[in-house]
Image 1: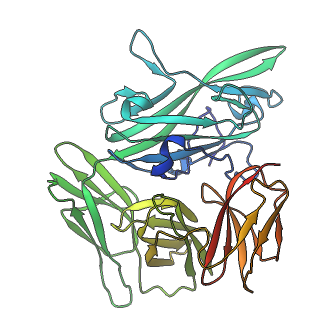
Image 2 (image 1 turned 60 degrees about the vertical axis):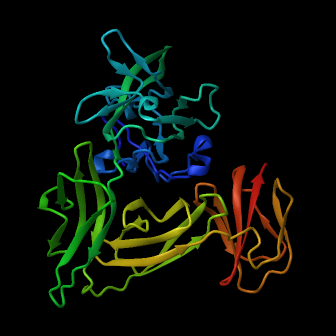
Image 3 (image 1 turned 90 degrees about the vertical axis):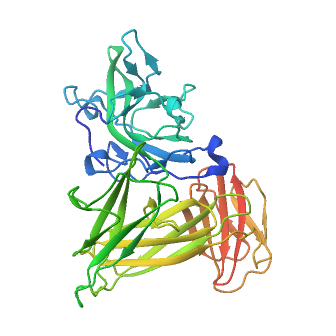
Length: 430
């Protein structure tokens, strides 16, 4: 994340939920700490939107904390000048075919598109602060969802033109552009990547091997390290050291880059322990989730999540919007200690009463959520947002839970024992 010098912004923690794609709504709840301005993800530190796939449902979220003063936008303004509001400009093409608004520029061809022209759309959440959904007030946090089914592949630079309003005796506005966002839309060419880890104790080299989908003919397969240097070509490549790698598949129709392929050193002795908490998906839905619990890490750690094919599907402590299937996660700390938890089997059918016969009422609830039924000793409860973030948790208190301090909205209330869960969708309406 960064403070800005020219009001440039980046975004997003994206969650794929194919069954509710047309109604996706983000929550403006990113933790910016003590920052006065922040974005997630931040391109200055190498963050970008989650990669999309041509013809497959996509969703990601931009989180942005609007600065309180104009100096946070442009340091030529005094630090005492408050920002009234920021408005995202309408999508417009002028007579010279110049695009403005939210513009997707193909980095390879320099062609410009609006979101709808490549199968995507944007939905803003301004917390109800203005009747105009694309208006955001100073000193507040907001979010926007980019979603759809991409119809055009490529790597795009996203520019977001805005109009910032302030007042010096009378209101005035100044145009700015949030820029440097990137979104890659790959083609469906890669079935998966087989990884062999290194082992510094016995001298074993690591290896990465690309498996193409049936019928795909690649004109080139190139491998890169985390610094962007090419380390080999062909179906597979050997590596002497652990690290993060990527593979670029070039065909006659498309160039696709698949990154965050982690090779770890199995010879490193580290004390980090990683476990994963799974919540299964309901029948016919894509609402499963997984959360890592990390103990003994040295400094900050990162977590990369992979699907059954070995391709990256998300990063961070939790991942949501999951279908039934096989998953894995790799956690790496600051000293390079890496732990992989593989063969995570997320199943369908963790129903609202799975081994625990409980009733939750009233629903909607205002202050006190009551639970009727027998709850075994040692159970606990968790309240999840629909985006998969933990809102509150505690050891089981027989009878009721105080929810008066939690923001209104829809949540999943989970009562859990080591053997079973009882999941209940509840609406908080204070």
